Image (cartoon, rainbow, N blue to C red; front, side, top):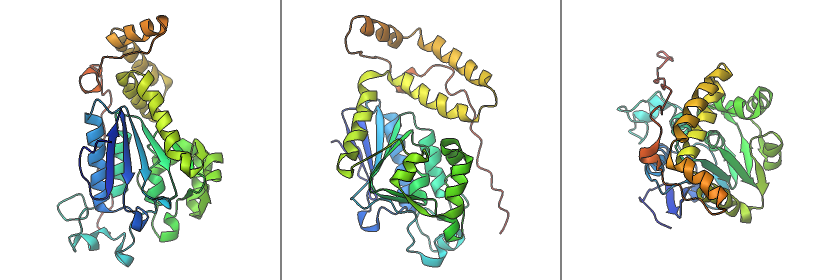
Length: 303
């Protein structure tokens, strides 16, 4: 596999259209840090910019954990960002948005991804280890995976924009039941509650994720897939189906005139594998993006 850049706390491998992003602190159960936050954001910048990448798989290093949550090595000041900024910790220095939740910065970046994202959850996933999964398009888990929205048991609250993502994925009742209790639950419960699509033996997990990614890479038009991802996610907040109809109409009208649409029809009629020529880097329709993202505004006062 090709490594486009050497990171310290993650590994990004790209081969044959599929990027595998691995959280890589196995001695710490891949616990989340400020540096990991920055590296994850940069990795998604890389995969978005690379037309050869058709799908991204996110997993954890080792066989114990996907991500065991925030690194708690700072002890009592783990979640006191003012105190940690005073020590100059990377990711919490005074010259960055100290008030911004680092997990949220990651999930918002994943939300903006132009490429489909598959989470291969290979072990313990609690705190940010579970909330960072929520903007991933498909989550599959190993049979030894465990999940926990443990924030209330740590005296804080759900983060990483999970109050937006989680109820939309599993419904408000299930979201609150998991977040109120903060208990850790098995992969079987994550499956029945709609958090993951399927559960597999750990030895097979990454192969299943690769098969999913391969299906996308080999059979779909890159621009169509990127549009579909944004259309589906953005419409979760739409106030009326007319909003979807407007975007659908613009998309099908625009895409219908492209070489991709011609190739999609002719390859089907000729019973051959399609070769879609349009690239995400320069082939997105002229109405994209059709939304305007809000900016971060601090509402916390001086508490």
